[in-house]
Image (cartoon, rainbow, N blue to C red; front, side):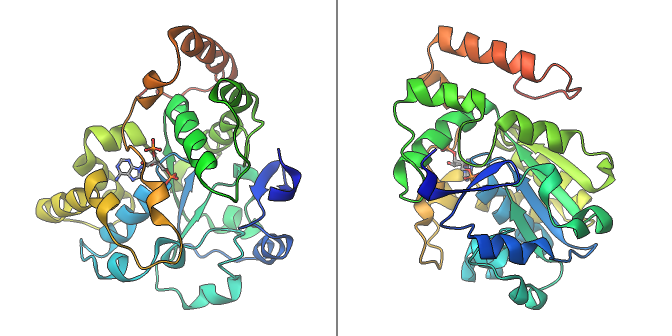
Length: 277
Ligand code: A3P
C-alpha cells in the first residue's frame, strides 16, 4: 500500500484524501440517533446505488432532494473530512449516513442506539473487478498494478479499506440483527422493484406499486449514469458497467477456481445463503 495515500485506522487502510486524522477523531464522539439510517458497504458493492434508492423511498418517489443535493452532502460518510460532525445536527430527519468501516469500529453510540443499517453486498469477484478499475482511475488511490497481481492482494486483504472477508464476516455476525437489512447487488439487478419494496418495509415507509416502480425505473443503471448531479466531484466514475458477472470477462477459469477455493475456506463458518452461491 502506498503509505502517503492511506492512513492506517483500526485495522483499515483508509484513503487520507477523505479520512484525515482530524476527521477520524471528530467522528469518534459522534452520537447516532435511533431513527438514523446507515448504508454500509464494502467499497464497490453498490453504495451509490443504495444512496439514491433510500432517499427516494423516504420521499415516496419525489426526486427533488436527489436532484438538487449531491450524494455525499445528503448522506455523509462516517469519518470523512468533507462531513464535519458539527454540520450533522441540521440534516433532515431521518438522517442518512454511509460507511465502508468494519463492523467493530463505528462511534460507540452506534452500538447503544442501534440505528437502522442497510448492508449491501456483492459477489466478491465483481467487487474485485470494479475496485480494480476504480482504483486505477482516481488519483486518491494507489494504482492497483496488473490485475493478475491485484486479485491476489484482494484475497489477502492487502487493498484499500480492508479485507472483503473481514468486512462481510463482521457485519454478518452482528449480534443484534433486528436493525439490519441485508441486500445483495445481484438481487437489485434481478428484481429492483422487489428490493425497493423490502427497503420500504424495513424503513416503515409504505409505498404504492406505482411509487415503487417509479423509484426502480429512476434507479436503473442507464438512468443513474446519465443523471447530471450537482457536484464538484467526478460522479461518473461510480457508474462503470453496472452488471453482475463482469468478472467472467477478466478471470480465467483457473483463476476463478482458485478464488473460489480461498473464498470457501475463509467463509466456511458463515451461515448465510448468498445469491452468488
Ligand atoms: P461496476 O464497476 O462493476 O460497473 P460503489 O457505489 O459502491 O462505488 O459501487 C460502484 C459499482 O456499482 C459500479 O460497478 C457501478 O457501475 C455499480 N452501480 C452503480 N449504480 C448502479 C445501478 N443503478 N445499477 C447497477 N449497477 C450500479
